[in-house]
Length: 508
Image 1 (tube, rainbow, N blue to C red):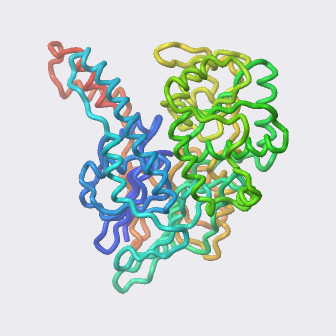
Image 2: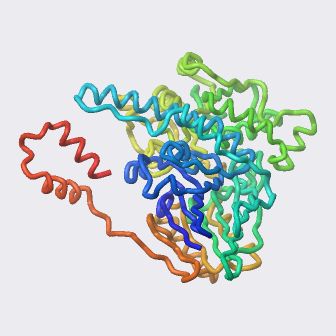
Image 3: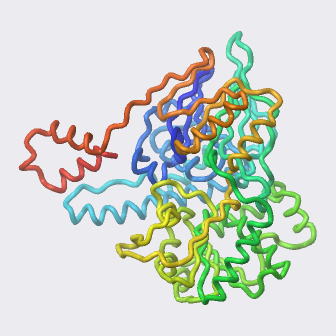
């Protein structure tokens, strides 16, 4: 059995790993790079042949894990995408939405390229291509053993990260070798977050591929974090401002609504107006309402009592662009939840433009902000940011509530691993920045685990128990530009725009 790492290796986004077993190529996730990762690595192509992939096993629907499946299909993949039923349904709305974003982004870029005399480019994939790729999806319930092919079976366990998210247990039998149990965590969920269950413990594994998003950080726990949100809302309204919550349309938005519902029901919050400004959030909320069995016991109890856990007086879902634009005329006492969660695209950018400069307003982050994103820049204390070509002052009060994050923190990750009755021989660390991975590696090595940080292009051979690293020393952008210019000879007669385009390509 061999593993190759092509994404979320020494970075957070773009999850993509290949398992080679019994003549089959199995892709574990096929995610999109976002933020700084996208700038450095790009989403346009694959360093393997999509036509040679037999299966994709998908841990969950978030775009950094699923977002390049339509591109894989476009480039020749015709196998099955194996996932939970909830993940399949969420992908049916999330992937076409992603395709729509790709089309809109390219439309804007091509208008600029046309003015520069450059050839138009194509989107990674279209909404229609994403819809067509859904025919490859096969959904299964949790905890059902699936015989995928000879010598390979798997089981989805609840990861507690997102509706339908899974820890994947895989059982590999090759020729006359002993069976190997490989566990891929996907994204492990935070404990005690609203609506969905805690991550499922796994008793044993031989090899674990483990995420490390918050491998160096701890979250605030329990009801206190929700009390913080209530306090923020009350203080902001008292100052005459709005509360803007950048949120992933799928998962975090529904969990925030569930938390707000409890505060309304308990009368901690009265007569509030909450606007969910995302068509995708509206669609995915309907899917959440379909999967009551995925809910935790508290949420099920609310439903049994005849209440809807994510609906309350004062809640409104906007649909049209006109409805969204109308929100920017509201000057005070509104809670606006809008995508994208990292502020990289979508309607949230308009709401930030109209509220970020106002000192009476509050911006509340409730999810991870990847390096290179607008959300990370704001959290890091930027005094000004650029939105729609205009410099906007950051005068609003900025809050970060990582306790509402869907990712396990350092202790959550460690506790999940420590609960294994049989200690794995290898723990392969992915899905984390360098600082979090090094910190978590040191922690679990001090507890007797054999841990390795996986880099882009690394290969792990289970027979030899070694990593074949293809990691090369980083080349600076200046060195890349100088190499390019030296290879082009005389450049005086080159069109300036063509030269700039080549330099941009060289430093990606």
